[in-house]
Length: 443
Image 1 (tube, one colour):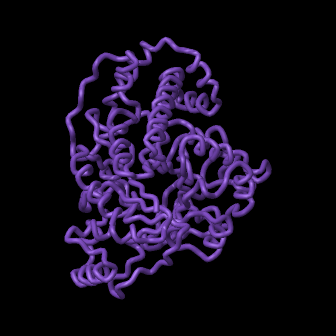
Image 2: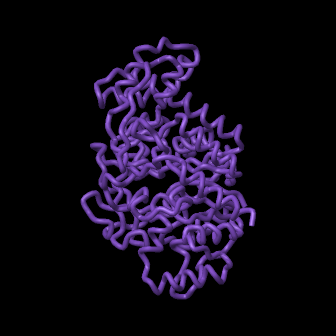
Image 3: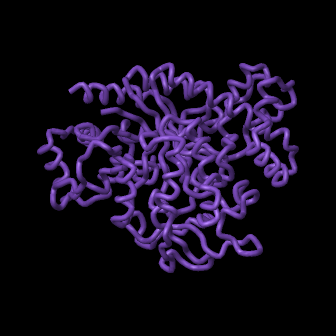
C-alpha cells in the first residue's frame, strides 16, 4: 500500500500569513520523504473566488501562493516584513505590495516571453485587468512567477520520491474567465445569465442538499467538437500533477440542476456526458492517472461508469464505519483510495467526539477486534486504514497529530471565515507523530 498526506498549500506554516510555494513547502516534502510517504494531496491551487472549488480560471494559479522568500532569492524584493500568526488565515492584501515591488524590478527574460504566449493566461490577465483596473502585464508577471515556483517545487518533490495529487474542481465560478470567454459551453440564457445552477441533492453530507451556485455545462455544445474545451483543461492538470482527483464524479453520469432562485430540494438530475466524454479523454491519457470522488448518494449507473474505466474510487471511514452494528460497510478492494477524512469532513478526533458514548464504546470494541486499538484514538483509525487492501491511504495532517473539530478545513454548505483557513503553526507535532505513523506501517 502507498501512503499519502493531505495538507492544502494554504495550511502550510508561514510567517507571511498564508502557506505558499516557499521554504516551508520544501521542508514538508523533506518530512514526507524521510518517512517514506509517497504522495502529498494539496487540494485545488487555481485562482478562485472564496473557495478553492470556485476557480476563476483552470489555468491561472492562486496568487496567494507566491513565495516572498523566493522573490527575495531572485533579488526582486528587499527583505519582506513578517506577519503575526493568527488562529485562522486572514485573506488580505499583505503580500501585494511585495508583488508590485517585484513586478517593478523584473526586467523580463526569454523564459518569461515564452510563458506569456499562453492564450489562457492572456485571457486571465485581461479578465483581471478589467476586474481590478491594474494593467494586465502585472498579472502575466505573477502567473509567470507562480508557474516557475510551482514547477521548481514539483521537481523537488520528485527528487525526494514524493508525488503530487492535484484536485480538479467540477465547475468554475460564474464570474470567471471560463464563462466570460467560453459562454457557449455553459447553460446560459440569451443575456448570458444563469437560470439553473449547480448543487447536490440531500444526502449524508447535508440533509437539506447543497446549492453551490456554479454555472452548469452545456455538454451538447461541447460534444460537437469532441469535448475539446474540457480535454484541454485535463491536459493542463495532467502536466501539473502526478495524480488528479476528479471532483464530483457523479456529474459525469447525472448532474444536479437547481433553479437559480430555488432551493436544492427543487433540483433535478439530468443525464451527463458519460462515456462520450471519457472515450475522448482516454485518447490522451489513462484512468490510472485519476482518483474519482464517488461519495454521496450515487445511483448504480455512476458506479457502472466508474468500473467501466477502472477508476480508483474514494472511501472515507467516517461514512463507512457503523458503530451500532460494529462493522465497516464498504467492500475492501484494491482499486481504491481510503481516507480517515478529507477536506469536507470533521477531523477523525472531532468525528469520534461527536458520536454518542455508546457508539464510541462500540467503535473501540470494533477496533480491538481488528487489532488496531490504541489509547490515542486517531492512531487506532490510522492503523485500521493501513490494513486495508486499498492501493493508497491518505491521512490529513490534522489526523496524524490528533486535532479536534476546531481544526477542520471546511464545513460543506456553509460560508464562513473558518472555511479554507486552517493553518499549521509549525511542523513539530507533525514530525513527532508521523514517526509514530511510520512505525505503525512497519508493524
